[in-house]
Length: 304
Ligand SMILES: Nc1nc2c(ncn2[C@@H]2O[C@H](COP(=O)(O)OP(=O)(O)O)[C@@H](O)[C@H]2O)c(=O)[nH]1
Ligand SMILES: [Mg+2]
Ligand SMILES: [Zn+2]
Image (tube, rainbow, N blue to C red; front, side, top):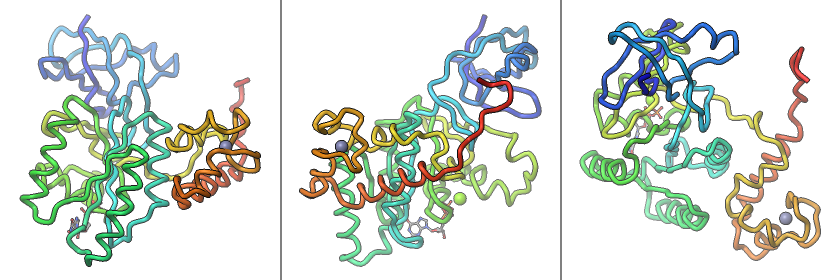
């Protein structure tokens, strides 16, 4: 039996890349469908093949996570692209992305683009936010001004941190995702995100998922998280996805404290003492409200 990772899915074929970077065209065993298992791009698999154009996937190995858009499994790093202006920097949007990544156990790395467009005062504002996110434990990188400097900066981070990792790019439209990818590899931007739609992939866009080698990493060729609700998150677990709150859980009087009305809550105290920024707590409350107000999900027929 051979081992590899699915790096592309197209028209019922799965393209599996093995350790020596050979790509095998394979199909999934029929039994997967019966078991309601769908192989995903990013899955590690065991397969058998006589030659590179005919293989059968025999086993799917355990996944550490999966995203629905793009449909990818085993994502290691989520690169969150936020613009400083045009559109304006939003801690609320950033926190939304961070909570989603935390809930999937994907490591977030934040890049702030368009720093070159800022006045000195605006720059200081972003630097202050940076310090607050660094204090939580997040890596937040302010992109350099020129293309050459950006290239050097981003390539160094890829080299030092992202070797062998599966990466998705995340960020609202206009944030600068394509631009940043383009800085590293100008052939990539064409294959990525919005651009691919305008190239007329049409109906295939949702079916076709591909991992593209970038330096020593693989990136998913569509941006992540097109829907930004918290459908998969329960209210009791939300606090886990705010690391600075989760770290204080032992100091709250009540175990299972969700930092609302409970007395002697260490999180509310930290907010009062301005150790936790007020906006982080406000976003926590906002997201909690969204989770509480979401329509009840009815269990599927046959489920129990
Ligand atoms: N001045 C400046 N403009 C940028 C920067 N990054 C992106 N842009 C511009 O912002 C617009 C949107 O960028 P794009 O990469 O298409 O965003 P995407 O939708 O996230 O892929 C384009 O006009 C880019 O030229 C930056 O660092 N500085
Ligand atoms: Mg784009
Ligand atoms: Zn509490």
